[in-house]
Amino acid sequence: MADVVLTEIHGRVGLIRINRPEVLNALNNDVMDGIGLAIDAFEADEAIGCIVLTGNEKAFAAGADIGFMKEFGYMDAYKTDFITRNWERIRTCRKPVIAAVSGYALGGGCEVAMMCDMIYAADNARFGQPEIKLGTLPGAGGTQRLPRAVGKAKAMDMCLTGRMMDAAEAERSGLVARIFAPEKLVEETLAAAQTIADYSLPAVMMVKESVNRAYESSLAEGLLFERRTFHASFALEDQKEGMAAFVGKRKADFKHR
Image (tube, rainbow, N blue to C red; front, top):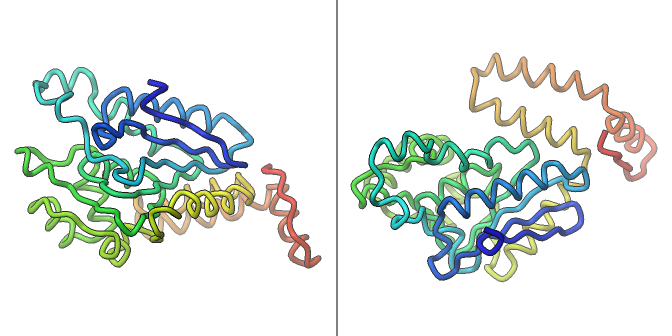
């Protein structure tokens, strides 16, 4: 497991790298368990404020490992809680997680990227949900997260035709936040992650929780949640420091509490 998922620490940023280049980083239980363990460690580490998940220049992840699942019956998938058991750990992480996508992010790879809080892409990135070609459908959020990112029409198009979306279209459609040259992708993503990590961690977590609430509630309920969370932020030492620094025209020295 240690070989298929590698981790590094860059300042206050934890980097997780999927490492199965021989199969274009195809996702199996070892990979997903490894990602989960890495997230557990980085989330427990108070010195880490943001997490980056990436692959290599050829592939973020070209999909789930078909050889691993092709003989599954219904009870195999149901009794092992397939996908839910370990893939969803990305979604439940309270610290921000940025997907840095170069090359292919297809099927489960696209779905894992969408589980992250935002996607930064290399200009060679290709996104797709080609499960229809295998006689099945996306099962890790593709039919749910993709419409929320790009709208119903493009999501239907991608899921029903199996076509790939390039980085430029993905950015125009709202799936991708920023695009970089492949050789600059990880460097630029780490820089953005460090910017986030240098802010007050409690405030960053509050922002993440509030933005995510927009997808889980009505506007009225979402606004109420935001307002109460905003009010709660006045209990933070970092809020006092941040506003005092602004008034005093100096850089804030956040203590993450």
